Length: 79
Image (cartoon, rainbow, N blue to C red; front, side, top):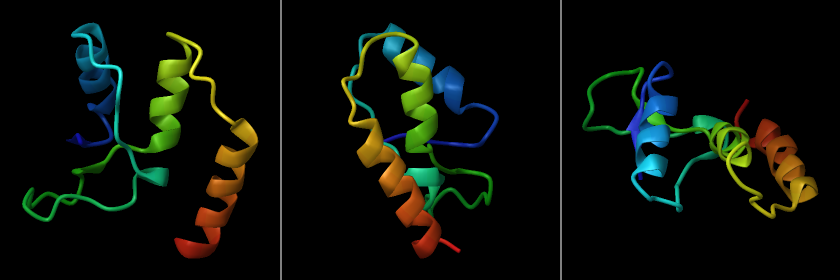
């Protein structure tokens, strides 16, 4: 999966999408990161950001209620 800083994630996803990629891996709210990056700003790309961007390009056929429930539940896990 891709790692990015908050300023460049969108251009990375756009490039991958334009190159034909249709499967992306993210993490809710972008939690986690890459311990080898040695840069606090490099982390996982937030799932909700991926969804917002990709839904503009095609119908993702997501269960939005389940996604919202996951986002709410994440507030209890990631304080």
